[in-house]
Length: 241
Image 1 (cartoon, rainbow, N blue to C red):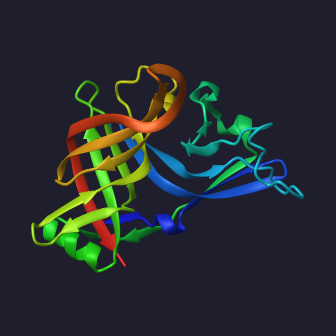
Image 2 (image 1 turned 135 degrees about the vertical axis):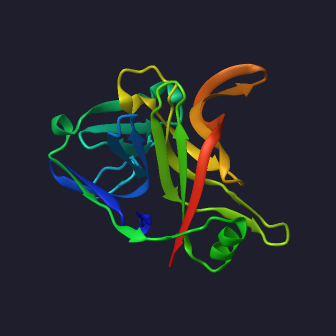
Image 3 (image 1 turned 180 degrees about the horizontal axis):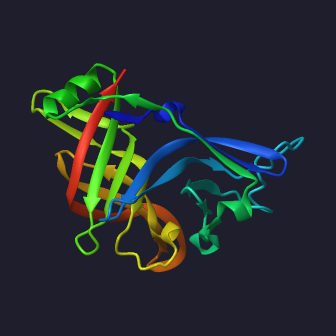
């Protein structure tokens, strides 16, 4: 079985005057009942900057507020996510790659990995210092389509005495089957995932969240706070050196 080695996998997008190479956080493969599949690659976040400036490489928070920058690419479409201090300024930016970028290059390294079918296998691989990759397969009952998430497990908890493990890792591109948006790129949620069995997973999704002072909402800030339980998720783990 091959999985991606995310420490050596990147996406590079080219705009006038710059090539930005950014590491991958994870991927989602959507498969329809007729067998057609499409891969979506999520790239890691960075902070807004004035690239190649002589000074003040990060933007002035008073005159030009900084934001968290991350995104998602399908074979022909893009999604850019900008998270500001206040969620009122946020807007999902999507479109065709050909209309926005001079080029998008994918450098993805796939490596053979060993399945970890038991909890003891997961514990042993974790304590041996191996790279652990997780997959969550979620099938939508209404459409029959399947979303396969794959990502590196950055945080793993193990208890050898109790024979237990638990992941807690992200961000990853969670596909929300319930989202009615006609633009498929809008249906993805930035999320963290936790599971401690081979079926069932919890996703902690980013969403605007109220900041309350003295009982009054004063602002909204995007935060990982919306919990979605997917009991039908089929979870598999793999390891490689």
